[in-house]
Length: 602
Image (tube, rainbow, N blue to C red):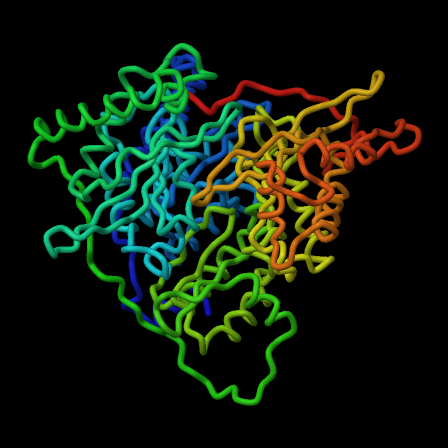
């Protein structure tokens, strides 16, 4: 069933609630590109303009761009996916990339075609405005918000309202550096301590009345130097959400370091000022904002309930056997919702990649199987279909199988995160993207996704220290670099262990430098050591957590013990013994560490 078939069969299927686009921005971008090509727009000014509109530079060339499409709160509708499929086929490379920040990226777009993509996105209410540059980036929300059994209330409407307020807002157009909001459902399903502003929904009883609010964390972030955020106060009432957000941004705008790009994220300001001083400034600034803001300056929170409407007519499949792989997929890719009889299904992608034909097929599948009529982008380069009825799960699996989207392991260690790496990024030193795919394929081959001891662990890989792959909060994390033996260079990764992003958020401890072609053997060796030394009911995540914190009493008591055992696996062979060792994944040529100018800031 295609999207057009769905429109005919179900003309009242849900439409996007918010139009994020402005069609005039496409024409303006096209004209600005012409001026740039004619030499009438200097390169630095054009770069800032391009980034503000969501077009990122592409590795070692000024003729191509990556267009980053924002999905506020991760929401994506079937007609929007169908349009992205068409745009990918027409103007990109026939596939798209789902990121860890609920964006979709189209790579290797000719600069003159970027405005055509903007026009297409505007037709379905999408935008890339402020997906890059020194502004409030895409506002994230847990894909389980609204369905999580542990949440106090659904934070999605607040995430959407925050995104709408700050989009194109003069307050956030020229910040010292990029600024990120993340809403979640509960401690388990979010990364609220690792962003500029992280929010967990909370309620409290006030004179017999249930009051909504948030637990707010400030000053976290991942990068070359990472910091865990601090809780602002015990409870922030919902009416103070906007006051607090404006106060924090105003302080960052005034006091953030605009000269030193390497240290101008808000987390550095918080660290250098000290948390208590920064917190006091926020509370004072919030009081000023509360007292002086206009009555029309408010969050437009839409509390219209989600309409749940099953579209599939139940057929009699009694007695039929489940398809091959179905039970494995159910175990590793699905979660029961707090709504009885419904499930959230996570679609595994290889390091976030999906072909244009799969995007089109997915659009139809969402319209057919999701009773809320949309999908949510996840935090781990995957896609969540929610409100899938128990009776529809077998058929959904069969449909996903037909289009190559039924890979198992989405919610396990067998689905590593990998940033784009040297496939497109100017700063990357290694092909982290391809390494993540190699690990995933190997782990699924070994059926490690079915191992309950490994299910809550994670592997995250960045192509450089800047942490786009979130390596700092992984059970086993890697960031890329180069190493040399004699005159020969080879790709190498710094490995950390013990990172996590739940209620016990902490950054991983540096463990060892691992050659790229030894990463998979090293991970398997760590799993082997875990199996040999684990306690009953232990998971790899908890075992490593004890090691990093000096609380393990087995043969491996410290990170140093782990390092010594792994030493033999890190010794490089000569190039004559193993020439492939000196090439990066996805390359048959000699390794080098050539990089370009980064565009993480305008």
